[in-house]
Length: 304
Image (cartoon, rainbow, N blue to C red):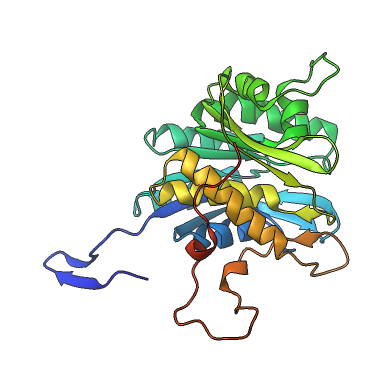
């Protein structure tokens, strides 16, 4: 619930500051990922979202055809105008579009060294090899040194962080975290680690330990936007004041609920229902009080 406003000599001021999070991401007109995912996920955990658009995907629910990036100065101006007005508790970085935009965001992050940065590396398999390499090189060299938490799927992080991996077995979450730590990242959240059969693991790791993990069954459907959803949820919970382990554990629960309630809006992939918590009870009875996302975040019973 919004806090009441008091009129003081200095003007209108809230009795209690509302947590704010800034996200840099691209528009996704399918509603599966991008800024839409960030805004819905962060808002669901109680955060006021400051959304900075880096460009737009050209896509449907089945595939991404291309991406149109904004001018890096326009991205920088969007963010700095807001940051001069509103304090933020966390910055999330999704798909930036170009090395130039990455550079602008990285420079901005250096100006706010006390604000944690959650950086998400999505799958770029829809793109050509040359822009992928240039984008990931810039992300690694410029943004990772500013990053508190790196988020990505096991397959994406493996190809990017450990391209020369020579073992017959896949790298562990700790090994991927070690590769990220060499670039300055203290924590890495790896999703989709194969566990044999129909199970996968999601794990928050450092080079020394796995801090939080969950093992889940693979979904029959193919989802788009799960990575944006979990990275935005963690960022939002950090902005709300939770510590990192609690934020990741609660984000696992939130994502599980959103995927369980997922749907296919078109002829392509399924989309997570990030507002699953707002749906009416199954029995049709009206609840005494409106539901909130916290009603569906069952503590920290995540499997370790």
